[in-house]
Structure formats: C-alpha cells, structure tokens
Length: 554
Ligand SMILES: [Zn+2]
Image (tube, rainbow, N blue to C red):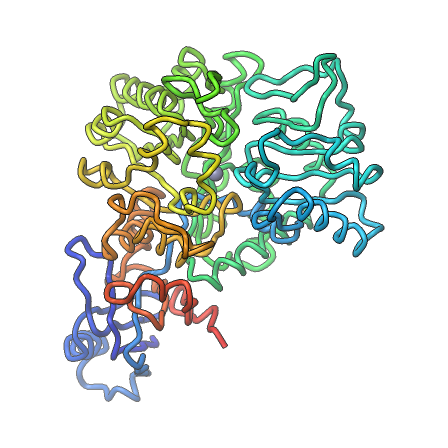
C-alpha cells in the first residue's frame, strides 16, 4: 500500500456544502482522507495501523505551497475523435474575413501539396459576412483540390466544387431527412451542406477515407490536449461505430485510457420507424458488449443521443417564432417519430441526451421526456437536454419538475462569437439567451462542458465565461448579460461533480472524497478568490489521474 499526503493547499472538494479543506491523502490511486493536515495524518495512521512509523508504511508527504486543488474537470459534452482530428485541421475560428480564411487554406495546401484534400475547422458565419458561403468563394483560390470546412458548430460543412464532384453531389442528389444541400435556382449545389446533409455526404465519405489507425491517433491527440488542460473525465456526445472501435482498440493497446469516459451513441432518423427501433436495440447490444468486456473500467456507453435540431447561427434551430428574416426550420426528429424511439430507449435503461437549441425544440424534447416519465416502469434515469440556448421560462420549470439535466457550454456564448447569433434572432430573444441563472434558481441539475471541437476545449477559459459572461477570446469585449454569471463555487461544482452526476460517474469521480478516484488538478490561481481574468493567464499547473501525475506545466 502506498499513500501520499498532500498538504498546504486550498482544496475545493465539490461537496454540496462547497467546503474547502487544507489537505488530502491518496492511497493506491484513490482518495483516502480529506480535511486538516492533522485530520488527514490521523486518518492515514489509523488506516495503516498505528504501530508503523510513517516512513516504514510508505507514506510520502507533498507540500503544495499554497496551491489551489480541485477535482479533475469532467467535460460533460465533447466529441473526442472529431476534436482530436480537428487539432490537425486548418484552424479557422479566429479568421478576420474571407480573404484571411482563403489565405490560410492556400498556405496549408502549399505546405503539403501532396495531401489529397484540404480540411479546415472552426469557421464562423460572421467571417463570411452577409452572404452564405459558396463553393465559388473557395474555387477562386483552390479550384482543383477538394476542400472541406467544418463550421464552428459542426452543424454544416462548406465545400468547394472539387469536393462536390468527389462526393458525386449534383442537381439530382436528394436532401436527406433533417438536412439540406444549398442550391441555386437550377437546383445545382452551391457549396453548403447543412445538418444531416453534411454528416451523411461529407462526413460519411471522409470517414470511409480514413483508417482505424487515424481514428486512434485522433483519440490520442484529444486525450493529450485534455490532460494538459486539466480534464480527467469526459462524456462523448455522438459516438458512431468507428469511434467505439477506436476507443476499444486504444484500451486493447495500452490496457487503459488516460482517463475513464462515458459516451452516447448517436441515432439519426432511419428510413422507417422499425429501423429507428432497431437502432435502439443495436445500442443496447453495444452497451452490453462493452460492459461485459475488460474495457468496462475505462469506457461505458451511457445511452443514446438524438440531435433534435440545428443551430441558431445557421437558422437551423427550431424556434417558436420565426427568425428576424421570417424563416424558421423544422426539427430533425418529428414529435410523432421520436416518441416511440425515446420510450424504447428509456425502457431499455439508456440515458437519453437530446440536442435542443431552439426554444420550440427544447419544448419538444421535454414533451418526449415527460412522455417517457409517464410510460416508464423503471426508475428515472438522468435524461439530459444539451445546449438550451434559447429557452422559455416554462421549459426551465418543467425541466426542474422532472429532474432533467441542463447540459450547457459557456464557450458557446463567448461575446466574440455572438454577433451573428443575436442578429439572426433580431428581437428581445437576442438578449435572453443562455439563461443559466434561471436554471440555477429553478434547481435544475446542471453540468458545464465545452462541446469541443465546436468551441475551445480548455476548461479555464470556459470557467472564465461562466464567472463573468465575458469573452475569453477577447476579454476587452463587454460581457453578454453578466447577471447570468455563476459564483465560483457553483461553476466549479458544475464542471466537476455536475459532470459526474450527468454522466453517471459520481461513484468514482467528480469530488475530492475518500473512496473516489484520485483525479485532481493543481492551479496556481484560486478561482474562489482571484480576479477571473487570472484564469486566462495561468494555465493548469498539473493534472493527476488515479493518483498519478499525468501532466505538469514546465
Ligand atoms: Zn456536441
């Protein structure tokens, strides 16, 4: 048995009373005591048997020099392989304008002229201006090599003509259910693939073009970036078969993952209601196969993910009232179509997660969960609604009533990316987005995540936005409705224990509590006391998983 006592620190435990401690002990990868240094030493002594001297019993002591310690962050909404893959793509989030964006693509192509495609990620509609992006805009600089650019929100793909040709998209290609190929008056594709059109045409094509080894490499990139930023747990929000295979082969190769994860398998509307129900059966079988294998300590399939609508920026989120330009958009799943599918998932014990951004969609998601609750014969599960960007007060109250978790991403309302979001709504709704304070006041279970790669994955900038409503990308910008902001202890709890609760991981992680995995981070800045701006200047000092230091800043 080996024990380390860490002392001389402010230890934020994420316990419900938000208490802090000064010391804690880790024994064989698990927290074994928390409290004052005297309490911790006494508890460790009692565990070891009082006859042994500390050195003989293998007890080490580490003086943390007054540092701040918190449970490791749990990113409760992420996309591990796409995040890891996006790290290798041309980064477009901070482009100033269309010329800047095109310049970066051309530079990437010149740097690697033999690459079969130019892949970019993170572009914002604001960058392109008033018009919607077109293939012609890209053809001007890259006419021959296929170009695929994931929108920042991952809900649409912008391609050039060479990519449209490689995908075989022409005037006869149908729009899939829940998606659209942007077209001109003659029906010819103009370069934007929205929602399921992006996933089913471009996504599936690129998926086939990549190898299982590529997937494993993407995963490794994602885990490395996470550990270096203080994340020690995650819920993947849109697993497909290739993702699951990559996760399992990484475990097979290394005997572990850097940290344990859970995930939701995505289910898109099939060609028939029977196919939808078969999709649920497949997920249940996959969950059992993983759960019964040696992968179980590292990877658990929590449930199913339904993408119910799109995003406000592209006007593909379904609103109760139309957008400023008079448009609106149908949800991807109709109420009639999803009800039996969700009920089957619920009855099979799957946790349901529903992407719902528009205020009409979150109402619909709630109707589905209420239907499950009314039909359900099993104990209530921690169903969750993702994003909730524009949401009515009634929806918040109803979520509280059935205990549905609100899973939200402060990085999605960074004021630096809000101009287009506000403009497309264009009325009082643009001032009422992301109402965190209403969820808190209503007592809705909350978890905060990043939704990487749709937004930066680092938790400290995310925490900064949660604490201020300000921009981590450009802190000089005025905050977006700071009255929504979290108190530091509330935000830290939502980033740790909240993620553990939402991902059904609280029996192993999310708090500094005896018996839980010793996953914790050490910071040079105390978020409970410091000016939040310091969070942007002081990266994570070190990250521990199961008591082992996996990362330390140099
Ligand atoms: Zn997501």
